[in-house]
Every structure is written in C-alpha cells, then in structure tokens.
Length: 324
Ligand code: TYM
Image: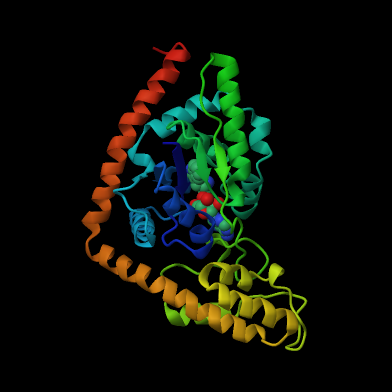
C-alpha cells in the first residue's frame, strides 16, 4: 500500500477550510492507503501561544478529527512531539537546505509580517520540520490544501539533495489536492484561516453558523437583488458543492445566473445543509469530550508504532551519512 502522510496544527477546532481542503481526503485515503496523520505541536510553537492552553488544543484537534470520521483503527493519528525523531531528522535536513529556498517561502514571509516581534529561527525552519515529518516515513502522497504546495516542493528538493550528497534514496512526496483546494474565508478575500478570524468551526452552533453565513461575501458583481451572479466566483457556491445535493446545486446555479433567487435564499439553504452535516460530527465530539481516554489512548498507540518506524528509517539515513 502506498504511504500517505499529512499534518495539521493543533489550532483547537477544525474549520471548514481544513475539513474540505484536507481532512475529507485524509478520511477517503484510509480506505486503501497506509495513512499517518500528525498533530504538529512543534510547528505550532513557532507562533505566539499560551502554554496552558496547548494540551486542550491538541485534544480538541484530535477529537474533532476522530469525530469527522478519521478512524484510529484504519490509520495512525499521533502528536508530533511524542515522536522525537521528527526534530532529530529536521536537524539533519537543515544541513542540506539552502537558506535562499527558505527565504522564498510565502508562508514564512506572511507569518513574519503578522508576528514581527517574534520572527524566530523555528519559524524560518518550519518547512524543514515539515519535510522531516514526511520523509521520516518515506511517504509518497501528502493530502494538503494549496497553501502547502510550496512546502512540498522544498521537501522534494531536499530528497534530491540527500540523493546527490549521500546516495540516500527516498520517494519524492507528491501533494494530493482536494476539489476545494483553497476555501476562502467568510470575508471572501483571503483563505479561511483561524488566524484571520474568518472561519466556521466544525463545532459551531446553529446560531453562529446562521450569523456567519448571513454576513459572508458573495459574488462581488451581484450588488442588487436583480443582478445576475456567477456561482463560479462565489464562495457560498463553493460550499454548496460540498454540502448540498446535485438538485440543490442546480437550483443555486440557475437561480443565481438568472437572478431568480437572491443571495439570501442561497445562503439559507447552505446554512441548513451545513447544520445538518455537522450535527452527527458534533454529537460524536460531545461523546469524545466525555471520554478523553479514548482520544489520548488512540494518540499513544499511534505514536508507539510511528516511533518504531521512524527510528528504523532514521538509522538508515544516519548510516548513509557516516554517523554510525
Ligand atoms: P494547517 O494546520 O494550516 O492546515 C491543515 C490542512 O488544512 C489545509 N487548509 C486549507 N485547505 C483549503 N482551504 C483552506 N482555507 C485551508 N486552510 C487550511 C492546509 O492546506 C493543510 O493541508 N504546515 C501544515 C501542517 C504540516 C504538514 C506537515 C502538512 C506540518 N507537517 C507534513 C503536510 C505534511 C499546516 O500548517 O497546516
């Protein structure tokens, strides 16, 4: 079976961008791939954060992944810092990563702007740790949203450098993008992202979802009710494509193009469908919160088998580098 690896920051709750852009695909891949999914706490500490809240954020992320359908019996889920080989490999990879490649990373540039008081070396080396996550398990496929593609290009460059310098062979990991590779936030401008405060979390209650969708931007050309719109450029329609039936999507497309329906009608239907979709997820999340051991023991089991595999793979690389 092909090896799949992906990671997510412990930002607390999953939002619809994570869910549609990555996690839905993660779940599908568990059908016929050997999948490893990691909650990347060492990546998260490169940003400002409150230490007392970190364990809760990790728990909530693991529980919401499981509630969305990621089954720890069909894949491995674990916390990055529970497998210390990740940071060990990151150090090794630092020695084959050119500074210039890291300086070009778009995410580094934008994060340095948003936290100009805390531009730390970890933030700069963030993509190297990400490459280590993937290469430690010799993963071939990496299901991610579009914002991670540049980081994966760097991981492939690192693979080539390891090959040239030490004759060490690894697969070049390929990104797997879902249909919704970049879900915009409710402001309609940037991607949906917790740090931008434009998200809907999978844990949001019906009132919050209703209010958020009501205030969300639609096709900017559609200024008045009678103006026809273009569903292709409308973020609300992007979400309909996932949450609504084909019949409802046809209704939304035709109604929008002919101005038979207004944005309010289209949003109302989407709101109903999101609430219905999230209901069972939220029910399972509630159960997991009452039984935290189920979540922590799944993470411990994941870390145990990952650690064995990681240590064996890292030993091979050390040997190729003359380190043992
Ligand atoms: P993170 O935690 O920002 O996001 C997790 C996954 O969700 C995707 N995503 C989106 N997709 C579409 N539209 C959006 N608005 C949206 N927002 C987030 C992300 O692309 C990602 O796939 N650096 C990574 C975590 C990481 C990782 C890895 C990923 C660490 N090591 C190894 C893959 C492989 C990150 O911060 O993801």
